[in-house]
Image 1 (spheres, one colour):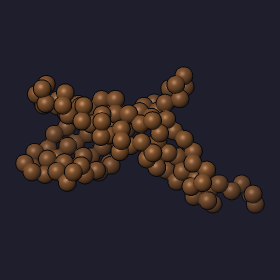
Image 2: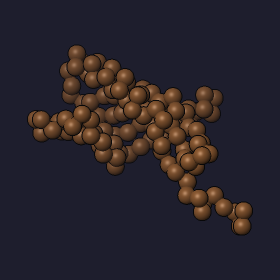
Image 3: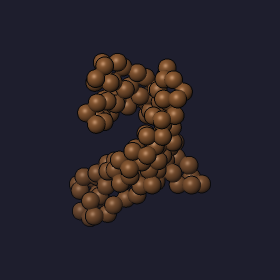
Length: 117
């Protein structure tokens, strides 16, 4: 589970990642089960979040970085359509900015050695 706090109002938990790689475009597509907790009202909502992007290896930091990130879809169950469209638009705008350049994994230096090299 991946917990995130958004504007100190919403707590977002992501779980059950379904990851696919598109060889034609080189993009990785991930869909998460999502739990959104409103800290002001105490209301918890469930839904789905879909994110895509390109993976890049940063040889300076030995990290896998997510570039050209996009929030492809953000759906919260039970939200009225007029609010759902606004939430999806906001998630696409902010999510892409927050996720672009995200360090997904750093490879430890000793994991890069083969024998004595």
